[in-house]
Image 1 (cartoon, rainbow, N blue to C red):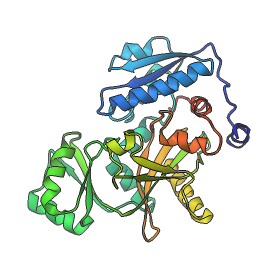
Image 2 (cartoon, one colour):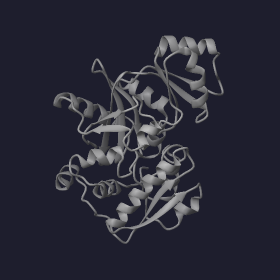
Image 3 (cartoon, helix red, strand yellow):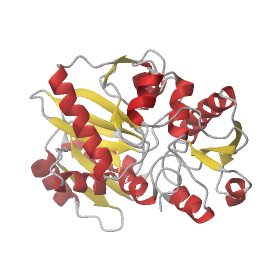
Length: 325
């Protein structure tokens, strides 16, 4: 299957010179630090297994740690101050090629509100939503009215720029809305209130300079909600890959995911999360530009389903590294 991807995606595996130094940038200072460290370790181990010279950088904001003689940056950061275009901008200034999306795509994809506005403009279906800003909050009566008319119940409250389902709450009744808002504001100054769509939770991984969708994964959390515990606790979630969908419909979902990747101008890798509603409506939730890359994460699962092992996947992403400006 590696040969198939070499032919169709036009990137030779392990073509980088082995004498270059690759800096795996992980950790960071966001609420997703521990997940990032796990992602970074998996990538670092794979690179050394492939014979590359790699340096693990536990990034804490020290610019010198990045600027110190690395030739390529393999970004394994999650959340704010890493996945949001900030580190990408630094690398552009330092003229260090890096994996993943550029500054603008990273910033927009990280900002759920803005990415959803782009989806709406491009006529890509996304659940109805409204936003709240901590510096300009409407009164509780206005919020309750927006919840009733824009989203209805149940709804989901989440930080605007965050991941790993941290600070996210499903709200079934207006009496629980304020507590969910307060929790989300602990993680971001702007929050998103979105209609909760009942249906199948699906994810589509996109890789390559010429983006190709990997097999769709259906996510079935045993608790009914794919929260932090369900994501990172063994046995709490069932993953079905490929998702049990009719071929033509799976193609439509994959094409929609690639369209999301393209309209946000993403590069080399992304993961598009969506809900397939009970009426078969496709509802895009968000695009992750630096999805989890632990050996048991979703992107490696999708790749493994067509015979791309973890190390080869890391190599494919590495070979897409570049400066974006």
